[in-house]
Amino acid sequence: MHSHTLLIMASILMGIVTAVLAAMCYFNRRIPGLRTWALSYLSGFALSVVLLSRGTLPEFVSVAATQSLMFLIAYLNFAGARHYIGRAQAPHHVAVVAAALIVAISVFFTIEQPNSGARFTLSSVPPGLLFLLSARTLATGDIHRYPARYLVALASAAHGLFLLVRPLLFSPGAAGLFDATHSLTVSQFVVLESIIALMLMAFGTLMLANEHSATELRRLAERDSLTSVFNRRSFMSLLDKALSQGKRNCQSIGVLLIDLDHFKSINDTLGHKGGDDALRHFVDTAMASLRNEDIMGRLGGEEFAILLAGAGLADALATAERVRAAVASSPVTVDQHTISLTVSIGVAVSRRGEHAEPLLDRADKAMYNAKHQGRNRVETLDTEPIPHLLSRAA
Image (cartoon, rainbow, N blue to C red; front, side):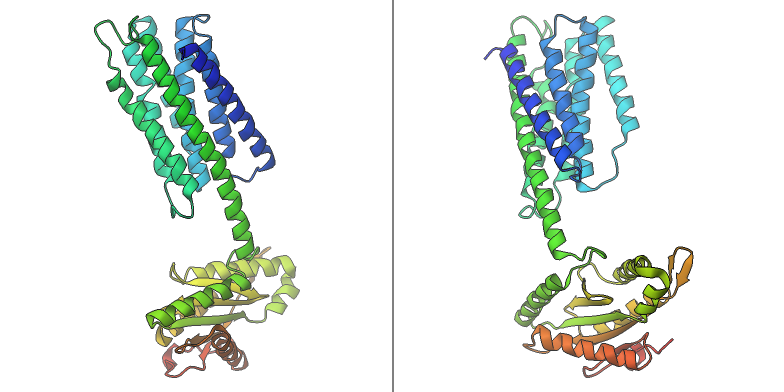
């Protein structure tokens, strides 16, 4: 196929992908990175137009536009990947300096010391490195849960590797890289590879958008909208699974049932917004005292539960005391009002073959014992309590 025909095909495909991504951006503004990826494909469309216009523009203008757009495609792809994963914004000022330097050197090798091989290397190595960085950024998380990330990462890595090695594959001969014998063959192969790679990444980008939407829907179904911990239904499901697994592995499961003390007075004093802020503050404080594998859920109102997989009674009591102390020492400030928070915690540890209901019932009774004995304390109905870990009322 003639290279001019390939460029026409590339411009059409880039235009279609740009339009599709732009439409998705308009209707799905919350999908991170999508706008940046749309700009990357818009740059690809502009590059195709510039390449089709080659011969009608001054050579140094064509070279400057081509080099800057090729770098921009790769950089925006990298920036979109970082945004999608939730990492800090890519350093735009560094990218601007790098692009300007690449363009300046390319123009030098066009006007002052013509060297098509040097220009080809400049158009290959920096974008290749950026595509590899994009692949590394996206290849995170469980591959079975996030397959789209790995598909885009694979396409991006393959394209990046090709860009890095193509100056070696098509090394300049005595007559130069773009001599009369080899220019058409190299141009066709390079354009065709770029079309295939970028279309694969475009397909993967659409899958990433769908993956994000599905993840958000799952999160909304599983999480409490105010505090972002698991809602009651999800927590109960996770507790059932943990108890089943604990039974197979002969491990106990610790449960902490937590109730914020005098929460009605907080609502009465600060209003519902202040109460919401207090709940979020409590969750942040409690989570900082837990292990990564511990699970927290909101059962309703100001009542929360924490699941401690593999925890015995001593460990569960120690964790409960750590949470209680952290909350008591971390007052919440709302609209210049500072209010101390305390919690009453009931602790229970699963018995052999026990189901969730009786386990939670014991933790609930222990929590009410903590309430009746003065609040701001940890209680348990289970055997062999550790007296020195049970807090006293403030």
